[in-house]
Image (tube, rainbow, N blue to C red; front, side, top):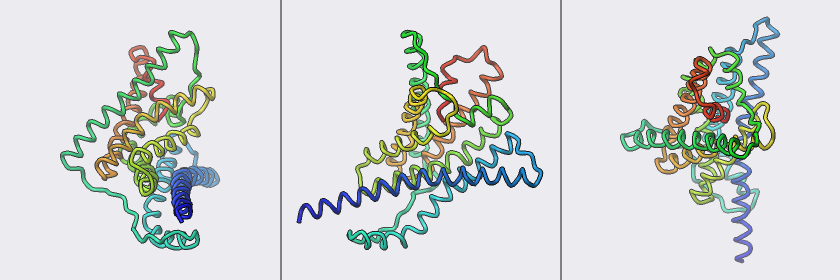
Length: 283
């Protein structure tokens, strides 16, 4: 009897993992595919897809439709799908409705936003400077890739001025709805808070591998490792407050800061330490 119960528990955990990762990766993949299709359609009708227009398409389809859209759709269809899936798998039917906590932050949550932003940014910078110091002391060189949005921004600085507000209005909310609201929320139903936060952070950071251009496998892995630090902060803030607006704001302001620093780096190249460029490479 106990082995049967243990088997059902393992099955429930496995389903949670598959669903969580599938939703996270699927949301991003859907957004990228729609962005590609949108670019092709615009080209066919004679509209040039400039870097700025390409970023707009990506923001609308990846963060808007892919991330936020998939997250909100899951909240709506989960009550219909979950009982059917559990019945077919032979596990107890749980009619609990999945939800994502979202509200205007109160004073305590606003303080969490401020503290989380400082921790996320300080952690990313510390990681970037540690890597720079290691390379200088060891005499080795890590070829780290560059985030595609950052690469476009470096080649077309005006795009960065679009990405700064978009980070707060679209990127932070869209990605946090999907990854903290749905992926972490789904894992949290089965696993402990620490496990859910760490697993979601690893998945979130790992999927950014596909957004990197250039760099060696080792260098890109290091860049992804730097991103895990702010990801943990995003996840912990959601677990602590139960309000997805909190990590969305931390994430949005964090990204906006990196885009701002990248813009300033381009405008005042001689005045900005090289380590900041590495921090900006792993959004």
